[in-house]
Image (cartoon, rainbow, N blue to C red; front, side, top):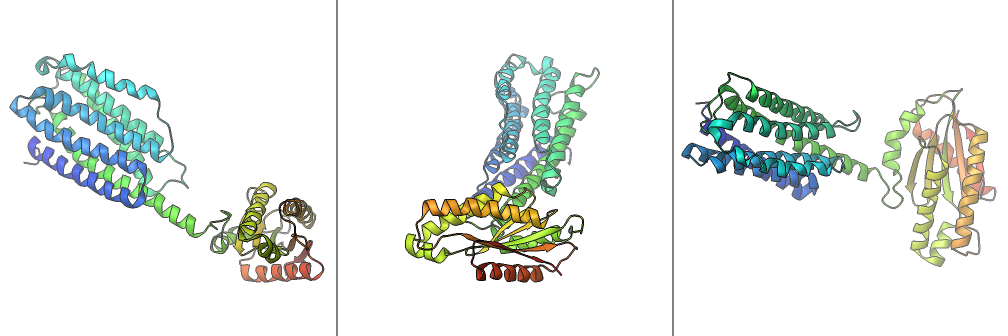
Length: 382
């Protein structure tokens, strides 16, 4: 009973339909375009598998040629979904599959050409599945378990169809597409059930992982400046602090905008937002790429650098203050200048005591403001 073609095709239809509906429900919450392509692919599998049952009644054109054409189209949807997921534009050469498939129409004499037909059909499906799997070969840090699983499942699925194509052309093998006769045809039906189940689970896990990453990113980012917020800063700072050494000291800088409230009162909060964004842009431009940049709240920013020195911090501070002060003076006139005060703490030993460092940074920042603002004060971490 397990190898009865009708039973296996019915299982295929049920699983593919469940996968299509489930992916559509995921799309309603995630709004990931790849889910639409994948769901469409499973719907095509549902239609194609249903039409395949008609070949037993002599409807070979619909039950064989058209049904297997939908199988190729379903894998094209899978490939397009993967391409969309990884932001890759597929080559237009893939559109040549349409006229190539139509060219198989003369091979409608199934008793004479079943081998060639199955070989070409399997090559099309195998090529699409393998290409989709190759597109998912992501970096280890960027790929989830679901992504890697989908990568290997698609590759294995495509390789199976390439073997199937070679088997179809091998002499002495029994193949009859119209009656589901032949070992490879029956094995293909079993493989189809397993592939549908694994591909659907992998696709769902892949999209959920991306959505969770996006939620985490939003929770750790300041929506105005796109810098890390206090939560994101506290989560990442220990990795840089643990790398501090007397030969490559780090530094924590706290920045506060002088007369920020005055500017807000005179020019509105849009002006304040503009200067906060301007400061964050300057930090991205002037600081090293591996520096940790965050807006802790209000007009207070934190910068964590590694492998630096007091002279380098002073030079960076002067450049940052000159650029910001010029932007503020040009954009908004105020009775008192809108400038930057900075407090820095040098770190020459590994530490996990971020609270102590922030306290020392606040002390240095307070001294900068007390001594006239628009300057940098540096303390050494004890």
